[in-house]
Image 1: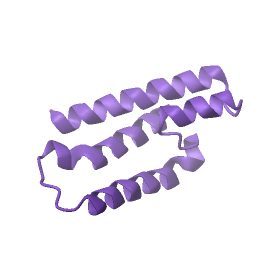
Image 2 (image 1 turned 180 degrees about the horizontal axis):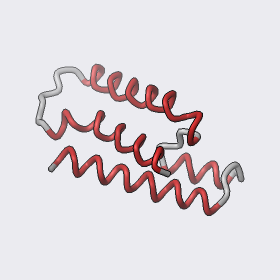
Image 3 (image 1 turned 90 degrees about the vertical axis):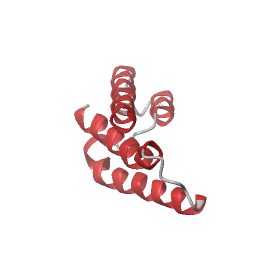
Image 4 (image 1 turned 180 degrees about the vertical axis):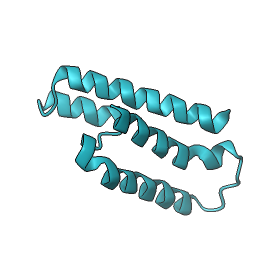
Length: 93
């Protein structure tokens, strides 16, 4: 669960720290590519350890398809939400 929390926290911190610093976004495409590359990199880093489900919707879909147990899915969702709240708190103070 710690890996999942760390992965989600890193993703949100990398993706939303420019927004918190009020850096003007010149080109939307550059922002989209940067966020996508951060997401893909974190998936590659954490996939072999925790499955790299960083989105609660994906976790629910995997539990619905019975690839995850209900207890593990709930634990993943709690870790994902905690990681995202911690990252937002870091970004916005």
